[in-house]
Length: 176
Image (cartoon, rainbow, N blue to C red; front, side, top):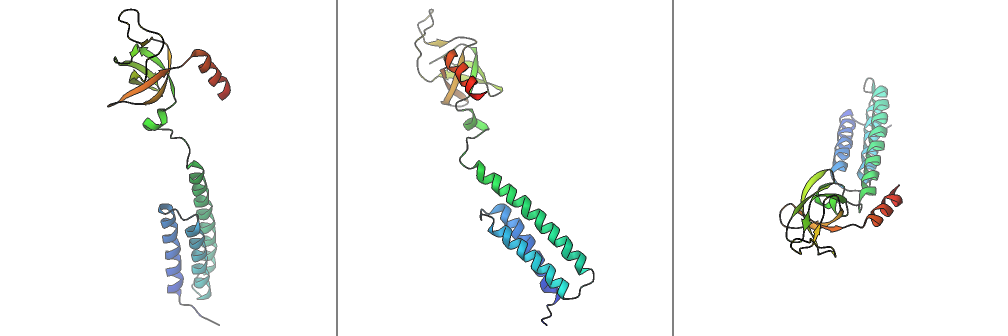
């Protein structure tokens, strides 16, 4: 019968833990997770075969830890894979397509204020709409109108286009 020194079992357990940590930082399709589970179990079996006191308890703990860590890592990696290619939810990228409300008139050359994504933003029209302001003839979107964010200008100024109320209601009906 082959007798394995206990130090090899301890080294295998340390390698298994290292592989778990590496799998958090490297996209390996779960290969490192499988390797770490196998290495942890092999290290536990090596300690069990070496006659280390309480090695049966250690092996049971290693099996439970390996199963829990493997399950958590496979779950986390699976959810990260499902998020690839999805729309950004935060920051400027997450605001594209969001519908907001005009708080002060917004024109092509005169910025106004809109409320979108839970914040007030300085906004300009991305292009001139059909309606114009009777005072100076500049295209304007009035207070209370709905606008959609289509891009970003210089600084923290968002570019918006008017949203027809019927289109807005239709989009709400489709979501609900």
